[in-house]
Image (cartoon, rainbow, N blue to C red; front, side, top):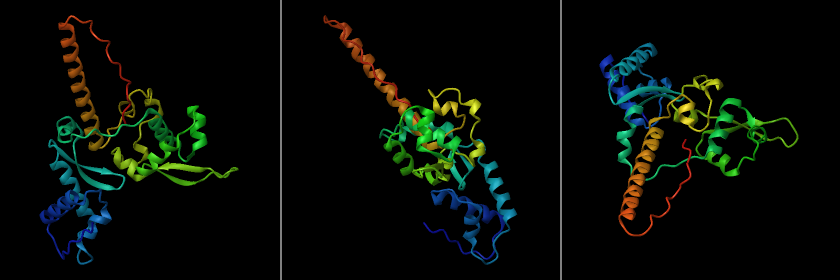
Length: 243
C-alpha cells in the first residue's frame, strides 16, 4: 500500500493526526523515513518534531487498550497484551500451534546465529525436520545468511526483522539472557518477553477452547455416573506446546 500525503506545511496538531492515522492505516510498522515520506519533499517537518509527536502519542495512549510500540521495522499502534483474553472471543477458528522441536530450533537460531542445520542437530541431539526449517522460512522468522566454509557449504540461518516484530522486540539485544531460559516446558513464559498481540490472542483462544472441552468432558462423565453402567475410562490427551 502506498502512503503519500502532500503537505507543504503542518502545525504540530495536524502532524500528530497525520502520524496517528498513518500508523493505524498502514497495517505494518513504519520507520522514521516512511513517516517523513508522508509529507513529500516540500517543507517536511524536522525529525526532532516527528520524534516529539511520537513520544506524545505514546504518552497519550497510556492506560488505554492500545499502545504505540517501537519494533525492529519501526513504530506501530497495537492492542495491549492484557486485552488478549477478551479479544480472543472475536475469532472462532483454532490458531496454529507450534511443536517443541520448532521452538527449540528457533531459539537456537536466535541465540547462536549464524548457525547451520548440522550445528542445531548437534545441540539438540536429534535431526531437524525439513518441515520445521520450511515453516520458519515460510513465516519469515529466519533466513539464510550465508554458507559455512566447510565441505558441503551448509547454509547458515539467522533471524529476521519479522521475527523481532512478531515478538515485539526492537533488536536481538532485547532477548532475555540465556540464564533466564531455565525450562522449555513453558517457552513464552521463560523467554520473558511478550509476543505481539496476535500471539497473545492465539494463546488466550487456546485456553478458552480447552476450558470448553473440559466442561463438556465433565458433563459427559456426570451423565455416565448417573446410569447403571460402569463409567468409561477418561480420555487422555497429549499436551501441546504453544508458541
